[in-house]
Length: 99
Image (cartoon, rainbow, N blue to C red; front, top):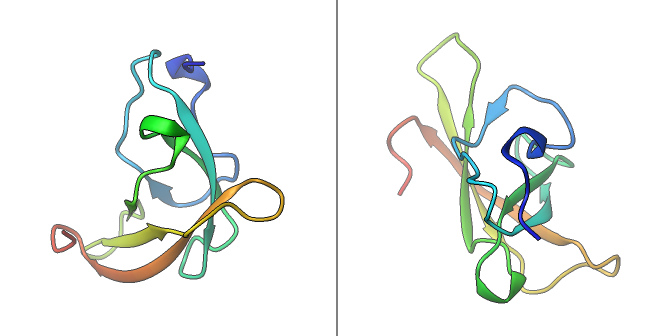
């Protein structure tokens, strides 16, 4: 069920990074980000016990210009009709300001 580190990546490219490195033994879950700057993007995130995605996830803006931004996303209450979890955008902060 774990992923090879070289095969773990986001499904849709964009100017963001998650800052997570997988050890090959961690289970993952695919989520769809909704709203905010990464709307529609699919990510593979580390799964919590029971296969749930994390309750919150910070997506960092990897663009080199400016001070940078961190986008906070929160897990939805249940999977969509297609069985995929969504994470909704909560807010954007300057790098280092997100909890």
